[in-house]
Structure formats: C-alpha cells, structure tokens
Length: 309
Image 1 (cartoon, one colour):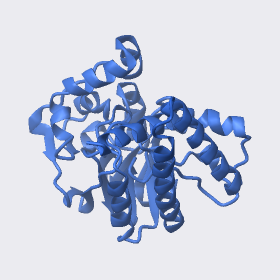
Image 2 (cartoon, one colour):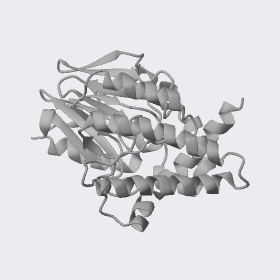
Image 3 (cartoon, helix red, strand yellow):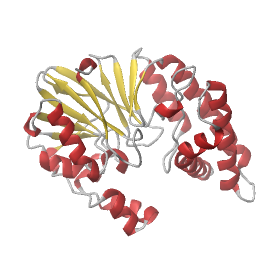
Image 4 (tube, helix red, strand yellow):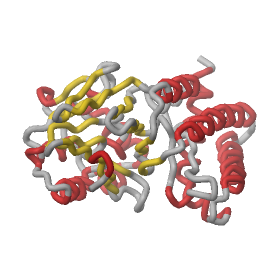
C-alpha cells in the first residue's frame, strides 16, 4: 500500500518518468491531483481500479494549473467520474469551462496536427462541476483536508496543494523539475522551470518560501515523483532562480540572444550535474533536459521583454 494513500501515476506524456499525476485515497474515496492529457485518461482509470476504487468513488480532480501536460485531459476524465468536481485556481477555472483560448494558444505553438497528436480534443467541463479555489481553499476527502494555496512564479494561475496527513506539497511546477535519471551521489537533482509565458522570479521565490513555512517532509512534483530533502532542494531552487535571471540579463542585447541563452543555461546545468554526481555523461544530460532548457530560455526571454514595460 502506498505511503499515506498517495499513488504516483506515470501519465505516459512525452516519455516514461516525465509527467506524473497523483491519486490520493482516503477511506475508500479518491482525489486526483493533475491528470495529464487526454491520452492519459485510460492510464488514470487503470490506476484507480488497481487502487481498488471505482470511478464513482472519486470526489475531486484538483488541478495545479492548466498547462496541458497537467490539465489537458481534465474534461475527458471528468466524463468518467460521475461524482467528482474539478478544483482550479480562480484564473484557471474559466479555461476549464471554455478551453478555446488554451486550444488557440497551444495550436499557435505546435500547429494543428501536432496539437491533435499530443493532446486530442479539449473537452469543456460543465461550470456546475467546477469549484473555484481561492487562496487557502480546503478540499475535504473523507475528512482529510487538502488545502490549495496561490503559488505564482511559474504561472499566475498556479496553486499548490498541502496535505497535512503526509506533511507534503503537491507542487505542480512551482517547485521545479527533478527527473529520477538525474538522481546523483547527493540525492535528487532539481532545477526551476520558467517556461513561457508568465515566469516571475520574485513570485517564484516567495511561493517557495511560503511552502517551506509548513516544514514539509516531502514534495510530489509533476516532473517527476516524490522527493525528500526539501530544505536542500529549496536552497538550490533559490540559488538557481537567481543564477538564471543573471544569465538572462548577461545574454540580453546579444545578436542571437536566444541561442546564447540556451548555450549558457546548458553549461550551467551541466556544471551543476557534474557537481551533483549525476551518473549520465554530458550528452545524455543535455538530451534529457533539451526541452526544458529551450522552454526555460523562452520563459526568461519573455520575462526580460515584460520587465521593460
């Protein structure tokens, strides 16, 4: 039986060990936290059955934010969960009821064919099944409180979920990325995610500090899985957020700013991986982090442009 009734589900998005959803089980009732894409829904339903629950036993689908690797399958999943309600940040909830802007934004990035391949058709959630979670909102799961707090930095529509039972946070993307392939001699390796378009370094720093005020024993990251040693990881996040901002500012004004920033971030993460005792060689580390480095560069550039306004 998983510790504290928390099941980690690999949604299958992109590659194994990249994108997690969670199922929290308490007294025969369930709550999903994030859900991956439409293609993840059969995996989530299978995990539910493996945990001994039926779809009617699920009371909640709680979304950390509405980026599609976290929430793209929400509408489809909700069709399978007759008694569940969806819980979302006030800025996120409208996009679950009417996903047109999410579709338009992602289609502009990926193109129609790639969007369809990765995400399928985004299904609206009826407004009567959506709960808007203001800062501090508590979700009750068979007497177990799951508290949602506003955690901007990665996105302005982001919330994290505190589970007092396990003294853990479900962190979405606010507390960074930690892939198990990069675990090293010193434990988990972590890095921030500044992916476009709402990276705010000061807000991310403040959100991390707010989470640390609960003295958490563990973090459940979407990318990927449970990690401990929370105080060390928080210190590393703070250090790296500052370093990423400095790298972005140093690259600003260069003829090919994006290329320069990708190169600078790549070298920075390689240096950290070597110091951390990551077993993979440099080429393998860069291959694993290629998408995240590209997105972090884009996020930092968007932040640079917005900070000029």
